[in-house]
Amino acid sequence: MELTTTRKTIVGIQFLFVAFGSTVLVPLLVGLDPATALFSAGLGTFIFHLVTKGKVPIFLGSSFAFIAPIIAASQQWGMAGTIAGMAGVALVYFIMSVLIRWQGKRLLDRLFPPVVVGPVIILIGLSLSTAAVDMAKENWILAIVSLITAILVLTLGRGLLKLLPVVCGIIAGYILAVSMGLVDFTSIQEASWFALPPSIAHFQLPQFSWEPFIFMIPVAIAPVIEHIGDVYVVGEVAKKDFVKEPGLHRTMFGDGLACLAASLIGGPPVTTYSEVTGAMQITRVTHPQVIRIAAATAIVFSVIGKLSAVLKSIPNAVLGGIMLLLFGTIASVGIQNLVNNKVDLNQTRNIIIVSVVLTMGIGGAVFTFGTFSVSGIGLSAIVGVLLNLLLPKSKAVEKGSE
Image 1 (tube, rainbow, N blue to C red):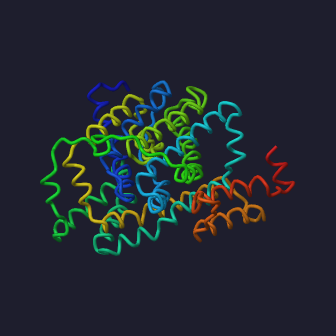
Image 2 (spheres, rainbow, N blue to C red):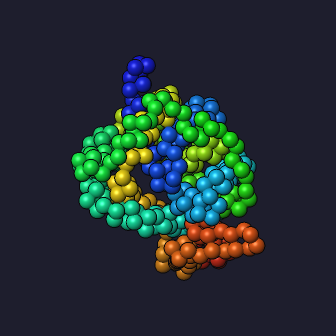
Image 3 (tube, helix red, strand yellow):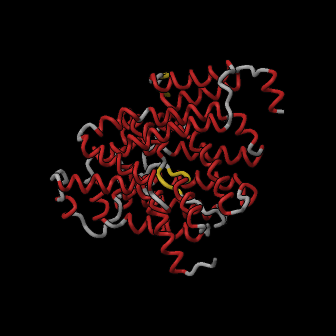
């Protein structure tokens, strides 16, 4: 069906609302400005479409994979150092783009098989569980109402509504918080209707530092793998092979440039959004121009000062209630990754890899060399990759992989 410009605009705005909740939730949780996150999501999406010749209908938004690393890094090097360090994420995407161009996807399959990626994704979710509970217990009533609303939308919602559990949960919790007198409207009243995001209005290049830069590099492994999966899924929805044209190396490079742009303007790293892919599947609208309309809408929203003030006024307990569901869902995706790829946990090498990755990650292991240190998810990801390369495979596995 040929869409008119008006219909494309309406659908594009709908697609942004599907991604809106997750995009602004990440900066709210790590202490960044939500308006900057919206701006970097829109800008990043435009950069991605430019690199991929405008052919791939993908929206880029704030990635949950970086919540725990950003919080940990900001405690060591401050937010300024952390933002500069996020450029390390872009470097990983660039390297992967070159490797895919050179060797194809086979090398990535060898370095990052499901037995490594699965437990790393589980860690991303579980490492945030304490933060979710701490925020929720500030007011359990608000948290539970937000959580139940999100669950009801997920289980009973139909069509696009089913893709908006975060937005609906936050709205329900916020309305209850207002009725309980727990929201201070002073900052909203004082905010301007039009205001550039702070990091853009007072733009200055981040001060580069090696420590947070290297700290962020291993953390990018899971989002890189997620990127590959999303490109395949979007191709299936759109009935096109984007892995061949414009090529997986281009999509990877485009995502890397978007992450670099986000770090330069003080936003969180951006990555492909599965939620918008789900919206495309429901609406059967896969035109890349519609995604670019969603990106333009994100940029417009980012300069509405009142909206940014409203987002910042959301009580922690409301966000905590949503986090109880979202972070558990991330961990579930890791388990699903292991199951769907039929990872045999009866094999000793697989049990060793999964066990060591989870134990080191949850236990907070830290490797220090001089002034450099790597810990948490990043260290666990590196250890998982090394174990997978070094541990011998059984003859049955080697024969099956030929």
